[in-house]
Image (cartoon, rainbow, N blue to C red; front, side, top):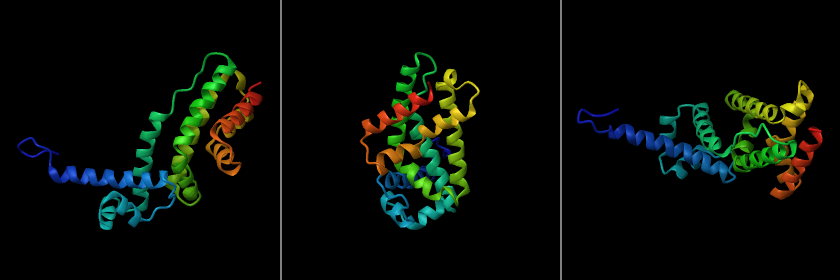
Length: 192
């Protein structure tokens, strides 16, 4: 919106900045390990009054959707297209590298979303949509090895999932390189 003089409306610009600051604060807290920040923590981090959150995001779902949209923008820049040609070994290597870069960078948001997945339709819908995208990537990368085998596709999808990555990194305490090696070994075995 602009004024009659052709300048941007100051109130609208401030509102957009405040809205962006709230979403950025939510994501920064989650990225930093606070998987369930309170509205007050988000407001404090954003440098806004608590009532500003309710003014810009009347429901929790609206804030989560805005956070998911911003996260999706950030994540899109992190995720490289899958290699669909070349030797099986090269495709596995490229796939694992790209997927683990993405999974490492998005671990905080993924873990926070998992806390809400079961009882929040917005988060569940976002998970389902992302899962389909990731499954399609597996299908494209390993089409020659999968063929029409739906079970093999599902096994490869699970093996390269965030849940498996988090289990390797956090539950088993593996370093990034060791976890990458485990995923590589699994994908290699499943694509033979």
